[in-house]
Length: 461
Image (cartoon, rainbow, N blue to C red; front, side, top):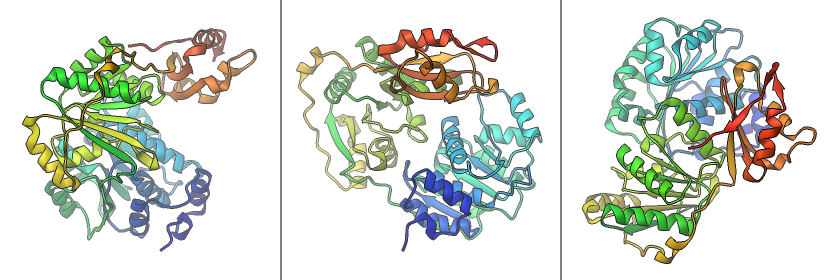
């Protein structure tokens, strides 16, 4: 069976774009799910994070879009704003050779009034979180009478986060018949019940969720007290010296405690959990993605939908509550064929978690010796990049090329010293090498955009 994208019945414009993006062979979840999706079937697809599912359902829904009809034809529901933003980014990439495709992202934490205005101008595709989508449906700002495709992305996670009522409201509002696509890393009874209620003779597709031992090296370390855990985290970071690492904690309290300790010890670290303001969450993730922040200490809210190109190390401060979540956590490293390291700490009190994990992974778990304590005398690694925040964004028609041009223009800095550029509605962010930080800030201060000074300032902890 061919796994080339040219072997399936895709629109020529989509095939041309896929080729330009460098996609040649379909990933397993794409090869298994795309044919039934393109034939109009309801599909339940179970696969791990980072398996390529967004491309699978993205191509399926884009194939059906009628660009002449400005009504909403596809709705994608995601558990978190971060995942919704990531899905929107991928869909825009996939749709760039299709004329006049309009996509809106509707999530909580953003003003509803601006979203209502955008909806009044029409959209073909809406990506959003259940709470905000349900609100727009209740207030009749979102018209779904022309909807053809519903995608439930990370369906299990949405239920874990308590979105059952919102999902019921949304699903009961949507027209029938329609195509429903359910993508989920796990398939618990709650998901099965939803599928039985809202899907029509769905095709079940499953791709193995365990990881290839050649791509992720797993290490387990037995510890006792909280202080021993903190020392273990420090030793592992000093040994592996990762450019990017995620430390998973089971509670917000642990997240904050671990982060405070790491900062006190000189590490570049920030925490990510449900109590943060949306702007703080966004800026933390931007800094982590552009390598100006080395360590993200997170609850499982970031276990899925974290869009990082290459993550060197994952550390489980405590073992996850269940074996499947453990696999999702460590799946943030070793993606797309790259190598990764996963280090997990456990105590005697977590023996039941260890036993379940041994059964799930099919291996015996023994505590390894921690790195030599002499490492504690060495200095922590520091990011080589710094983020500058700029006082203009998408609303002011600012584009990445404008920022790059402002920095590298006449008598400017080397382009190789400029990292990722991220554009928000009213602000923008650019990572620059620490070695040219002052010249970069000086160069921005000399530039104007729409008759306003293009001011940049440090984004700091």
